[in-house]
Image (cartoon, rainbow, N blue to C red; front, top):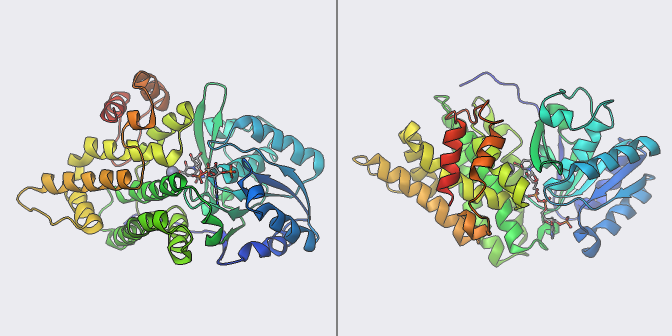
Length: 389
Ligand code: NZQ
Ligand code: ZN
């Protein structure tokens, strides 16, 4: 097992009706906030009105900035930074999913930096300081509510890039599973795929003797596999939604990476798809992850056999471990199909005519490799894209 530091400051307030506590939680940190949200589902469901009421009741004033799009855009981040500076905002309150939270984190970073906020996403600058961010989560998926990450798309070149730093963990995350009842089936499925991917990125490691976290990963995966199809059948079943919501946070709050080194190539390969084609990130992962697995499984056959046996219940064939490993990958792919996700580019209406460009973009034209489990060159990445056709 590797050495590690684990610290997660995000206060989780979980359960029915918890959005009513947003005013009190916010007031403990700020008196004037930016209320940041997306395309308006929170207006339609009445959540926005409840949040506003709670803020007013706690004596918190706010300025609104809606319009965050899935795969959040840099231009709106810049607009947010300007408002925050002009209006003396003290905290960014994100009400929505990963896109809103990531946009809020970007504003929080940019407002405390003299240069261009994009510098943090190109690696030109390292985060030193950020404003506090609070969250009311409406979709379990990205795990951004307690993660160190923010992912932003720069419309200039459609570059989708991530920035990671511990100062980006939100101060609090209010998580009421009832708020997820209104999620369309496709978004529910995309969320499940994303959280599974977060676990699998950590699971496929070269670090030995990490059975404790292996088993935590496997348990979280099995719960998502159990509950995601049921959420599609019973969207208003509280306990099903609650298990999924908590799994989404645990998948990406770094508990499952303690003592291990994760891979993360599939995420970088996927970000080109959602960056260029505006595909939902979870759908892109359902296409990329099985392809990545097919390309790398021989690197550590016993680990893929373990994945097949413990996560998918495949009866291991010890005379033919390759068959067992491939059956695990097949079941993952079948699962994604069963919950209504694409597993090939064509299923998502994406043509196969820009694979080389994407392989070049995500490896900085071949100057860097991707992944820690298996290091992938530009040529490897291209072969993985070809497996998605
Ligand atoms: O825009 P609104 O109206 O809010 O609608 C959203 C959006 O259209 C809708 N939605 C959310 N909650 C809903 C709802 N509709 C009805 N009822 C509800 N309760 O769902 C759509 C998708 O929302 P989005 O925030 O884009 O989803 P998600 O949480 O999957 O976030 C995806 C983004 O997160 C990034 C992804 O790359 C992508 O840009 N990621 C962020 C990470 C992080 N910061 O740690 C890690 C991830 O790997 C991921 O890369
Ligand atoms: Zn993800």
